[in-house]
Figure 1: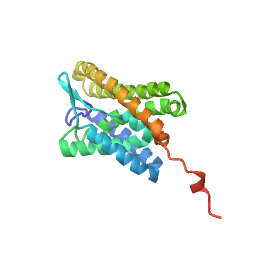
Figure 2: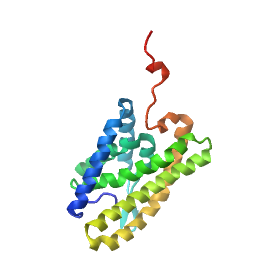
Figure 3: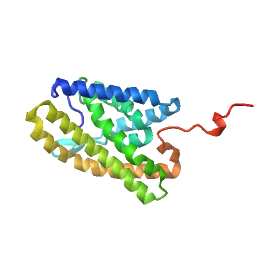
Figure 4: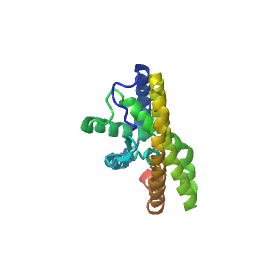
Length: 214
């Protein structure tokens, strides 16, 4: 699905995807607070485990991406987490490829980061559970469709023969987008009730810990 294997994409697309992912990971590492590392590791492990459960859809299969959820909770650190997940999947299970690692990473991570940046502030600011769930569901669904669009674009830009396949491929993302909308809304709603600070991609320093000792 989102794991494009080796030998399919053209060299310019591979280079472009690799450069964008490198820039995203560099930005992620620059902004990643040490206190965010445990959250990133736990969330990455959960997404990695969840991605092993594939649901057949027509001639293909889908699994949860949760890139929108990662975007809300991790911000730009999503790039680094997605890259590690895809690397482990390629090495351990043969999902995707090593030469396409950069393209696959940007296809999954970029929509999640972008839509979380756009709607995340409203999700954290609202006091309405219904509005929060709606916005979170929108982030989840739009992130999936964004990934589908980038996968289709990667194929279409590589070779014109892939254009018909790329257009049909988008249809396989619709069921996943609906499912991710409900999953993301449920997770965000739960965290907003029990641990709202988990929805902050940056851990704020409390006055108690930031103040210097007398």
